[in-house]
Length: 309
Image 1: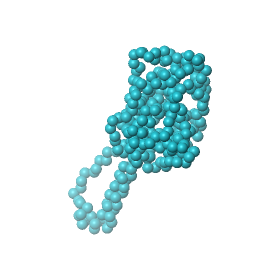
Image 2: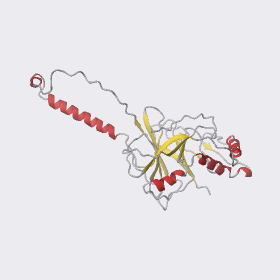
Image 3: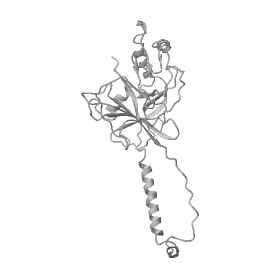
C-alpha cells in the first residue's frame, strides 16, 4: 500500500521539487483499493468510458491512488484509446473517484444476562415477535457488512501490475554532461509559466535545442523501471521543447494543477506484463486535476505528448 500524496512548494522549480516515482512492486494484491495499478478493471460504480473520437471502449491505462485528506479514498482512473485506427493523442479521459474511508469501530457488547432467548418466559412477558426481531436484526447487520465489503472494491477484469512508490533518486556522477543540462533547464524555467493558465515555453537558443530530450532521458535513467511521476501542484518533466497549451479550468471555476505524469515505461508493462496488444504511442501524458477535488465534476484533464523522434 502506498499513497503518493505530496505537498509541493509552489515556488520550487521542477528540478528541485519533490517527485515520487511509481514502479512495479514485484507482487500483486487483489481487491485492495489503496494500491495504484497499471491496467485492471474499473470500480463497480464507474461507467467505463468510450473514446470521444472512434467511440470504442477505452483502455484503463493506470489507476492512481492519491488521497488528499484522511476522510476519502481518492483515485485517478486514466483511460486512453488503444484502438488500432484511432489511439489519438487527444483520446484520453481521466475520472476522479472519491469514496469515504470506512472507520473501523469497536463495539463493546453488554454483559450477558442470565436469561436466554430460548427462555419461554421471555415470550410470555414480551412480544411474540421477539425472536423474529432478533433474526431480522441479525440479517440487517449481515447486509451492512456485505455492503461495506463491496464498497471501494476495484474489480480486476484484466491482468494488472501493482505499483510501489519511492522518491526519485539523486543524480549520479556527472559523466555525460548532466550538470550542464540541469543548468540549461534551470535558466529555462526562470522564463516559463508567465501566466497561471498558460504553460509557456520556447524561445531558446539553438545550442539549447535538444536539451529537453536529453534532460528527460537523464531523469528516466535515474530509475529505468519508473512508469509514472507524481508531483502534486508541481511541474511536469517535458520530453521535448515545451509548447503553449491551455489547461481548461474545473467546472467549479478553479484552475486545475499538475498532479501526475505517465512515462513510456508503462507501455512496456502494458504489453509484456499485462499481455495487451498496445497500439498507442506517446512520450508522456500530463495529468491536471482540480485542487479542491470538488463535487461539481469528476472528470479531469490529460495532455498526451507525441513520441520523441
